[in-house]
Amino acid sequence: MRPVVLVSGLSSALGAAALLLLACNHGASGEAADSGTNGDEAPDEASGGDDATASIVTIESPADSAPPGDGAALPPACAEYDAGAPAYASPAGGTVVGTGVSATVCAATAVDVSAYLSPANRLLLRIDGAVFTTFEAPANATQGTLALMISVGTDTPAVYTSAEPQSCGFAAFTYELPVAPGEVTYLASATSDCVDPTVVSGSWAVTLTSVTPYEGTAGPGKYYVAHGMLAATLPQSNGGPGTVTVALAF
Image 1 (cartoon, rainbow, N blue to C red):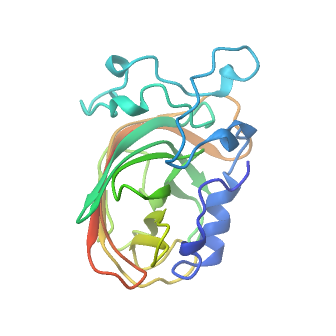
Image 2 (cartoon, rainbow, N blue to C red; image 1 turned 30 degrees about the vertical axis):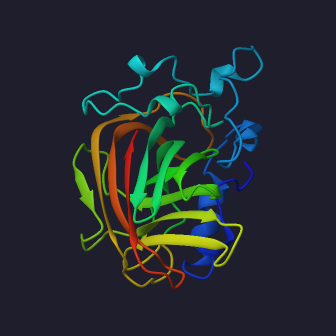
Image 3 (cartoon, one colour; image 1 turned 90 degrees about the vertical axis):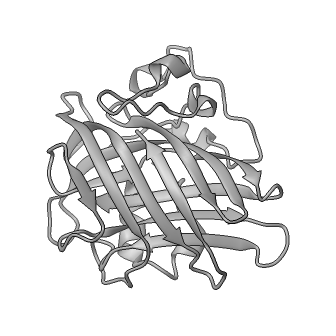
């Protein structure tokens, strides 16, 4: 799996070990993730061939796009998006809204256990696969990317927040402008990125409505099929004012 969700603006704000972990994907994702787009191109059509469809999560129509239990449907723009994620990942979509910012994000989320974090064997919610972003504002924004790695505690449906003592991780939204400041980054972080200490910024709440162990083959580790919602507030981290609110269903 190539590190398709990393953006250069995060490296100064987060520990390198957490960024490397996010790119490693913990398992055997397909190379199809490299076909993702960055906001200035249309998403590929959902794959209908026989070469990789067994390991790709796709949504057939907006009517089928509501995760079970929470009633929150994905945006119509995400209905046919193929993130190139492994079979245990859940299609995800939502909005990023703030002063002068309005975007729709399509991706896939995964929940798995990592033995590489501190303390070991944390359960993580993360973006898995390529991210597709469309902007209403700024109109000249491109390469929108949502990066996510959040500890969710246990494999039990519940609400997990960044304010909890054992919480760790980050959520970041980044895009490019053709004029100064160039790259714009919004970042929420807990007291650590699950490897190194970080400065607390913003907040999040993850609501898991269902968590089911994945029974298929996915490489080393323990994987889950999880559905729910993320609500996060991300302050701008590269010197500018303002915040954005992320609302993501998966």
